[in-house]
Image (tube, rainbow, N blue to C red; front, side, top):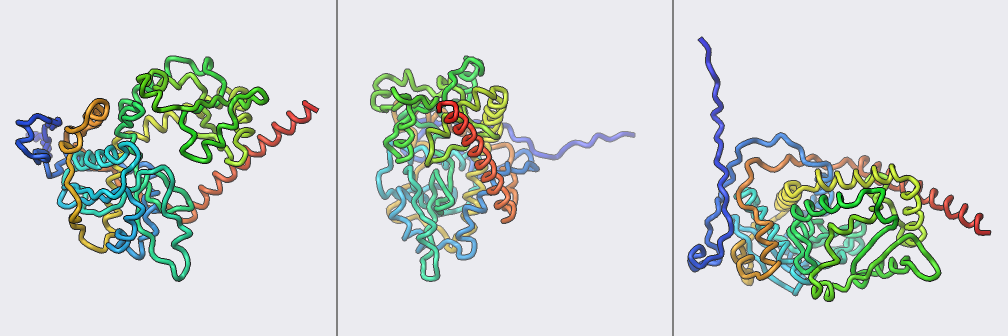
Length: 415
């Protein structure tokens, strides 16, 4: 006699919940609550998150001993554009100052999508968010025996000198003002654009296009552009976004920039010193033009990282673990601020127009995930962090030495 063992595991039919902005669908409510509130995956997770998820522990290290108090949140309001609170799976926002363009809209939209991907899994939390370009919370302001505890502030950028908590950039869900599509659509377009021109046929220059007036380093970079006196092998283009909008973005599609050789050497990038940009850029391009196979290998490695590691699934899992670990540090139970208003996908997207509405609909999570988030790896050991920094520093010095040899030979030839 033989027996067949059948799995007793539940398999839920994947049901989609598209966004419906009709009056009948909303039934007079801004947030109709028709989405599942319980997460029921079909499979358990045995997959470990990518290694860079370990930096979550490092970014939150500042508050590991003290925890996060309401007083810290209150003191941090002056640095934030908005406060976002999650209570019982609902999202509430208190606005402070007007952010640039609609970065805040797409950031909040991303958090709403996370709650749709993992309904009922994101804990109650209370956070402050800054959506500007420059980092805000300087580490040096909160050091010393008489210093106060730093307020936690989520931001798109971080550095060794600051305590800003790094959060995925708003452009993963689209940057409507400059016609950058949501990441999954943008990635497909970039891959398609990359195939139009073979590596060997691409322009042999370093290429940059953007607005130089938003940062001092960008203005300094413009000195490296082609002039009557110098050619640093760099082609820099000032982007007048108002004119670009009027022209319908005809010459600013990201996928069309793939005719230029991408300088991301060593493994994924080529180090350029801030204080000697022009010389470093010229040498980088010369090296790439004379080591085409190695430069192409580095370019492929960078592309592979983006395509395989920087997926939207990993973006959402990073958000999930960052917010989950952050919530463990809260020393109080989050409550809805008196001036906060509830937001949801309907209240956010249905009132939008044009490309803003299009991008929100494109990046909508239509159904819960069929599997849980990846497993967060443990923090880096202090020695591992130092070893990694030493390795990067050694590579930087090696490239700097190569550059010095190049310029010395060039000077000897011209004498």
